[in-house]
Image (cartoon, rainbow, N blue to C red; front, side, top):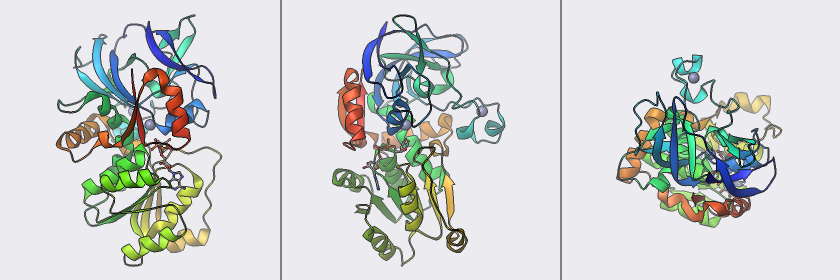
Amino acid sequence: MVMAVVVHESGGPWKAEDIALPDPGPGQVRVRVAGAGLCHSDLSFANGTLPGAFPAVLGHEAAGTVIAAGREAGSLRVGDKVVLTWSPPCGECWHCARHETHLCSQVGEPPAPFAELSDGTPLYPGLGVGAFAEETVVPAAAAIPVPEGLPLDVAGLLGCAVATGVGAVLNTARVTAGESVAVIGLGGVGLSAVQGARVAGAEVVFAVDPSEDKRELATRLGATHVAAPTLAMGGRLRKLTGGRGADHVIECVGRASTIRSAWSLARRGGRVVVAGAGARDDFVRFSAQELFLQARTLQGCVYGSVDPATDIPTYAALAVTGELDPAAMVTARSPLADAGAAAEALARGEGARTLLIP
Ligand code: APR
Ligand code: ZN
Ligand code: ZN
């Protein structure tokens, strides 16, 4: 038995309890979790905004140590330090063949049960990872080795927030040196986008959030200017960009209203990347005329368009040299058993990333 945080039904409480975790099967590894980040998507799965199966062990942003490997687990060995990814590409589908591994048709399929409750009820791993547990079992392709020199608890952030936010800037928007970037929403994803913009050499990094604490954190991580989400922010941004607006706007909230603000912050011919994961019934409106006249690109972005096997090691290397700083986004550490209280704080908008420690 291992301790895990279980959500029994959509909207239900988060309960710490013992679960039965089987040995890894062929192509799987068992990982002892060193730390798991609490991502806004965990809330969205728990409350039914994003679809998932219950009862579930959520948590999809974690790192740990391989403690057992099944047959055909590739080059992974017991003792390896790994970051988990919720998007391990199959390598065989149409998208994978086109190097669009983030769109792999196997990812997002309902995961098979990975464990059982103490009464034998099958238990599903949130996003295929199930990291809110002392230990989990994942496909070998979901465990990416990380270099020495990176604190293992914090390294988990590379698997979701950093991949999503940095990837949105470097892979999806393809920001280049000297450009202007606005980032809307400064949680783990948005703060990672700010860091990505700095790594890309953006000249203006305009970071927007209602929380002053998060704006301060964004300044530390590379934002050149910060703003609360008010009508006045557009005027300020245009002043910084020759009257035009940003070359790129990265939306990291996942709401129609903030997608709409992102749109109005972009310059004519600019690009809006929607990195936030929104609700299926939240609609954005554009007039036919403004789409044509503004000639902007509106682009959806799944998982920062990353290929986890190559991009996560790249981001890990940048974290070792200090060019990316995942640890700076961690505003609280909490015992895993207190995940429910941490989720309530996140829902109230408190803190950037909470790290849950088993
Ligand atoms: N304008 C700007 N920022 C806002 C606004 C607004 N109108 N309203 C809320 N925010 C900020 C919050 O204050 C918070 O800092 O958006 C941020 C969202 O951050 P988190 O809740 O920490 O979410 P995060 O885990 O970063 O994920 C962001 O990406 O992966 C998806 O499902 C996830 O949709 C979510 C998004
Ligand atoms: Zn996430
Ligand atoms: Zn595939």
